[in-house]
Amino acid sequence: MDTELAGILGAAARSVRVRMGLTQADVADRIGMASEVYGRLERGHMLPSVQNLRRLCVVLNIPPHDMLGLDDSFAAPPPKEKPKPRTDEEPPEMRRLMRNLRRLTPVQLKLMNLVASAMQQQKKKP
Image 1 (cartoon, rainbow, N blue to C red):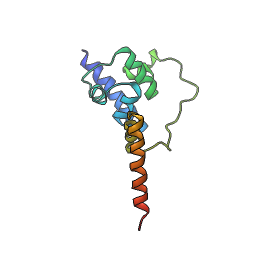
Image 2 (image 1 turned 120 degrees about the vertical axis):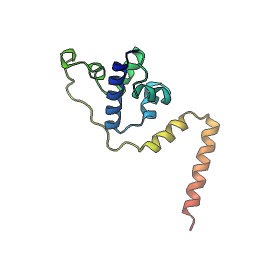
Image 3 (image 1 turned 45 degrees about the horizontal axis):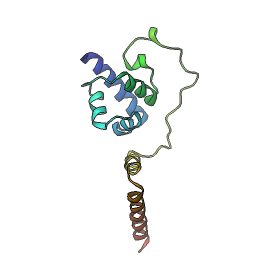
Image 4 (image 1 turned 45 degrees about the vertical axis):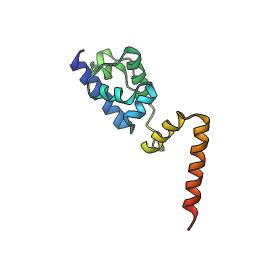
């Protein structure tokens, strides 16, 4: 493994992820990778497959030449307008909860909904 390249790629991924306000688990979930594996990637302990590198570039909205630490001579023409990070996005705790809820079976999801409703009712009582 090229440790210098892994370090460059990991630092770039972390920098963009933090700037976007995402957690490692958010990015890992969006590219279909375990969060522990993604954490190793960010720390420069591994290189992603080509497919995962492409997914990472798409999710983080970063050109591959920037992710790989190449200079601008490798750059494609810039897009007309880069999308701005959403400021109304849910906090990390809510995203984690939603990620976990999406993995539940319909029966488990129904039970969680009952628990949440009961908690709200309890909150309303004086």
